[in-house]
Figure 1 (cartoon, rainbow, N blue to C red):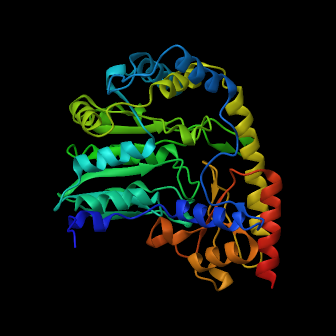
Figure 2 (figure 1 turned 180 degrees about the horizontal axis):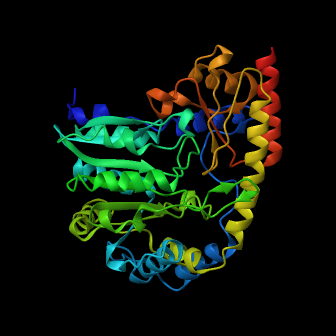
Length: 393
């Protein structure tokens, strides 16, 4: 029998893809399946972005690019970042990567090793913990609670820092909860981190365009990039997948401080060489082109959010607080008597509605399920009706 290193036995998974495969298998048998499990906008990539990729192919952009990303695209990210945050960054701190996960992978590999500790949100995106365990570092969960609106609390983060802490991962707007951490809490976190100058921060801001107010979309994201005191140890994760409905293009970007950038560049050279050339030109068109498709999508998400929250609160023994960001709700199903993963599994089998059980996002996810409202209003209404009928039975 072949022997692989133990680290590969420690790699976890993102169960949303396993649920997607089960849902697709069921649909292939002729069953009516509604997928509220996968975090993927149901909108098409805007035409001007697709056209830019086609033009790039026809113009002959078929070869390798700079491992860091095409210079014009890195300049586009710098312009976009300044327009969003007011912060001037150099294109030489931007790394174009094949999807947002690559930034997590790179940052966690950079700081994770046996004896090190890395803090991450729980419930949170499952790849954080998976990659921490892969490196041999100790994963230290930061509790994300419904009582706090699914925002992280600065004190909860700071209290878990020890001499072994190498990296802290924060995520707002958050997956799977839709939580948005208020500025006052981020201020307190940054102030507290000034006492820990050797601890790096990975800020996952992939949903930064997806925040809401009482009346619909509200552009109120607070980026950690706007805090000068941590800039020299901040890694920022962003990308094209969510904002421009480009999940399958596998396009992300990261912003690195001077002291870490070349390490990340070298990993790029060793691992993926460079990102798909025509996709990069499409990414530039997304950044610099018209944003009306993004606005249309966000208006739709805001309406669906209302539909989902009201519909979930109408289910027997289910309650749901209002998510302030992303396109997820995280309803409390603890009073139904079901374990979360068992309920999600049974709902797919018996009603054809795909959801993700909270424990797939961490130990504190029990009692909750994730509902993605990146599906049409008609599908959401139908799915909620099926779930209601099932729970009433």
